Image (cartoon, rainbow, N blue to C red; front, top):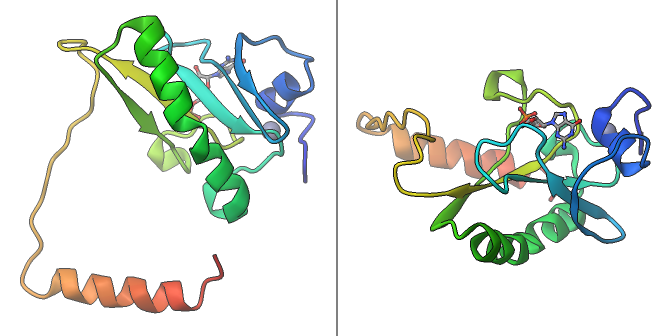
Length: 144
Ligand code: 5GP
Ligand code: ZN
C-alpha cells in the first residue's frame, strides 16, 4: 500500500491536511510536529505509507537517514538548541501513535525536563554472547 486514505500523514503528503513543511524531496517529507516536545520538533516521513520501520526498503530508509544531518544542523541553527534526539517509535508498546513510520528530531537544551528513564541494566554472565550469536543467526536469514 503506497498510501492509506485514513492515515493523517498520508493526508499531509496529499496536501489534504496542512503541515508546516521544512523539507521535501521525491521520497521524503519533513514537517513540524503539531504537538512539539520542544520548539522546532520535526517529523521525517517517507512519502509512501509504511506502518513499520521493519517494512521500509533499505534504500528508502538510508535516504530518510541521509537527511537527518541536514535537518539537525538546521534545528541547531534555527532553535539555538544545544543538541537533539532522533527517535523512532515502532509499535504501540514503544509509543507509536501514528501508523505511518516517522523519525522525530527533537531539539534539546540543558534543563529542558525532557527525557525518559534510562534504567541501564547489566547482562548476567553469558547472556550478551548468547544474544549476539542469536542476532547474527537471525541477520543471516533476513534480507537487508
Ligand atoms: P508517535 O507517537 O506515533 O511516534 O508520534 C506521532 C506524532 O505525530 C506526535 O508527536 C504528534 O504530535 C504528531 N502528529 C499527530 N497528528 C499530527 C498532525 O496532524 N500534524 C502534525 N504536524 N503532527 C501530528
Ligand atoms: Zn500514511
